Length: 304
Figure (cartoon, rainbow, N blue to C red):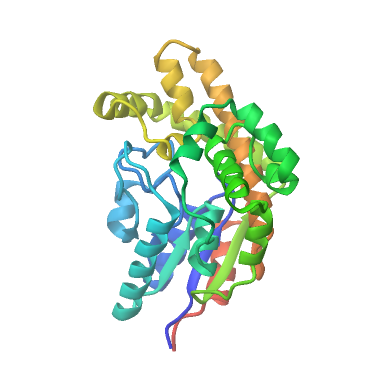
């Protein structure tokens, strides 16, 4: 019987990669990226990818698989992740799934949400409207979905309204039916958590470090090479804000504050999603790394 995967999830800046790397060293494991923004080549600093040295030491899967001017889908992620899992099982290698994209986890372990197919004419009509108007309409027809979608998240607002217009049912109702499906892969689930104030301080510090590490130059190079980011790549917190800064629309200090706010909002959405997952062993972010590793190794023992 194949050993279960180890899942390490948590909000941005909670230390998932550090924990995953150390556990991988103890178990001879490889890592599976479950972050929707780390799939893009060249988007390294702003998505907090593992360093080149860490990636040389421990194999990482599904990093840098898409150009930043290309779109990426949940369906593609699931297909490729399934292939990675099957390959590791065939080779007898342990695998750690690590990242902060709740929808990727849900699709990988419970299957894709089978909503209606895309209606391009309807989508174009919806995209022409202001996000604030879309959000108010969604509140009227699907208050539950509006509570989960940020008012500026045009992509998800359009999809939620598209599903409602095509089916006559709120997307939140259809997704509730989806939640009961059986798991597709066996896993041991570990999560990192802390209180909001501590996490906010970690986020603020990491944004500062990213900017000092050359994040602005990274974005400048991407714009020079690709012209513009794809709609899905542009969802990465901070990149559009730095593009605005490069165009003279904001100072670097203003940009940094905008990114901190966006990242804190992202973390709150991640936490809200992850708290719905069952069977997660939650570890405090501030617990010493050695102790966290010990608890994870106990929950995910070596094969006899």
